[in-house]
Image (cartoon, rainbow, N blue to C red; front, side, top):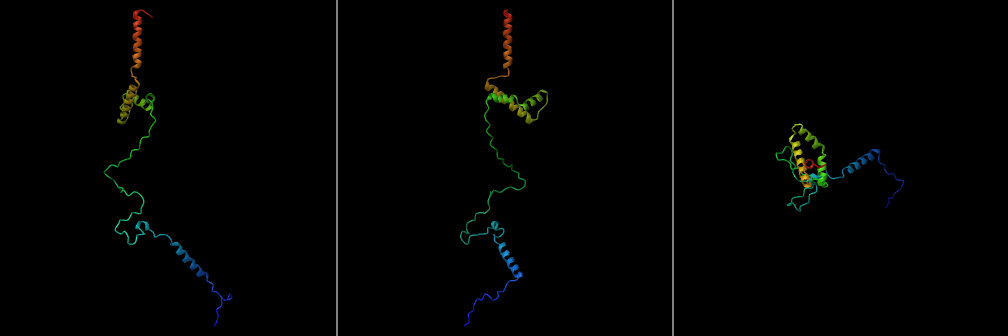
Length: 167
């Protein structure tokens, strides 16, 4: 019986450069195809085998399922109203001063005094501001004629002094 010995001197066939290149290409090709198949998410790639076929499967896509109308629609789109930012409440006196020094209001009132007609939006804005000024003046107990009344009373007192002959 002959023993087969592993003789280090026995020749081992070396691979040629062509064979090495071919093996490298095969390894690269195998490495390239590692991930999931393309379109697997949309097509529902991993379906359960046999169990629950009667049930509807959950849609794997993320996001809103609400249908979005494409093209022109006849119904108006409801816009969401932004909550008004809560402004710090001004005192009636401060608000009245702010309205009296409003440049836009002054300019529009000057145009009205000159006889110009304002657009509907401008006129509505002026009316709203004037109404607000009236409300604030009523709250504060002021009136437009306060200055004139004081002058009239002083004039009456002066006339009474003159009639009585006093200085």
